[in-house]
Length: 296
Image (cartoon, rainbow, N blue to C red; front, side, top):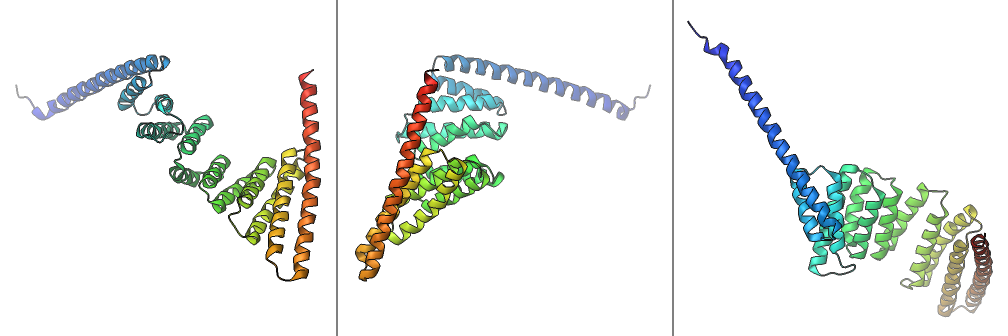
């Protein structure tokens, strides 16, 4: 009997394919089992607060399956717990970067988790990795330029780096996106007051900065007329104008202009005191309300 070898080839190929698939399934099953065993050990170490051992086991599981977000998150917490807050020792900086990497990979999978974003922000700020933090969040912002949380974070980071202009830029963008939130406008006023109070600029520049803050605080008061904090900052801004007017008067040679500047300084001081009194009254009302509520 004549056997056509070409007709038998598909059967051989089919057998090889089935065998290969079975081998893949078997290997996948082994990988899955090993991943879960590593996760079980990691969980046990985690509960015992044995952070280094837990981290090793989470990393082992992630080498097998890098797409399980919870493992990235818990790996981040392991390294978080190894960090001495504020320490710049090499071991703490290494743990910080590993925690950041783990948390960021977790977010790449789940996309959004505000609580983990808080941990990332905390790490960048507390460990003084501000330049790295700015770089990271500038990239995040490209994907969602209207993310108010990221805008506020960038404003904070630039502020801590001493970059007033960039801090103000991002805080204004954030306020524009949340026009009904007085807190955003109060934050801008606080930025302007702080910059002027630090006396890094000439009196003229300080006045320009303060005059950027005053309209913002007026918006906050318009939105929330009972907000005592808004009045506190309005008073502080007026005191800065009183100070800068007086400084300008000291350098003024023209006696008439000098008197005008000194009079202006007094006017600003009067306004500051009036606003201070409103703030004190509102604080007293807030305290009375709080005490009354506590006795109910």
